[in-house]
Image (cartoon, rainbow, N blue to C red; front, side):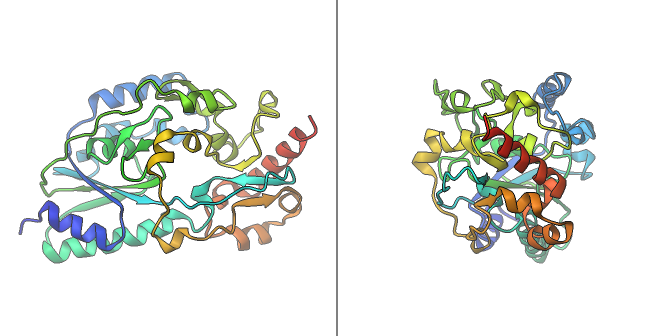
Length: 310
């Protein structure tokens, strides 16, 4: 039995996804060429996993034999909130204020798959939430859910860039979307605002200078050259998104109950440095903050405290 675009849209909306787009599962030749150039410059820094499974990133049929379409889904996570500005506290990126989005979206994708199989038991599906060799931003753009902004996040005219991306590969055929026009224009607000110069040029991010990467993925020490430049961020960074005019224009609060929590909007630096492993696990087992591990969070807290002494 055939499954229509409308069938998929209905299922996705019932699961509270904000964006739903469709693309043909064809090789990403040009995009992978740019990826290889980016990797050759070492811009992936601590993210060694991006160097693996290049053939799968280029061609999703290497992931799912017989793949014909890619469905890209977007889930808004934006929530208003104000940081205190108190140097005794470290700021946490909005995406990590509440429950780890992986847990939330994995559950939704399981339900999504079940609903599709009710319509066609033979349908084949492979789904990812940035945990596999899939170029999710590329597919979001190809599927018409937005354009790639100069800050390297996908921007939607409906909800800005504050959304998580889920990617579904399937052997079903769908009517592909028309990609959106890049509307960044001559704006360079994100490049101008980045305190560490991580956006080395438009659409190009050097992760070795990115506050988000340095506080999360990075397992080593934070280079002394960035002392006094972290703007109080202990986990992640939202500066390039905060200054984006499109976010100011189209950003709206999430309707997802799972992202309403603001428990971790900022953390007391002293508390982090004194925390034990058992306390950390208990507090952050269901939070994205767990990804940085206690060692990383203590490093971040000490870095901020030392920066405050400048």
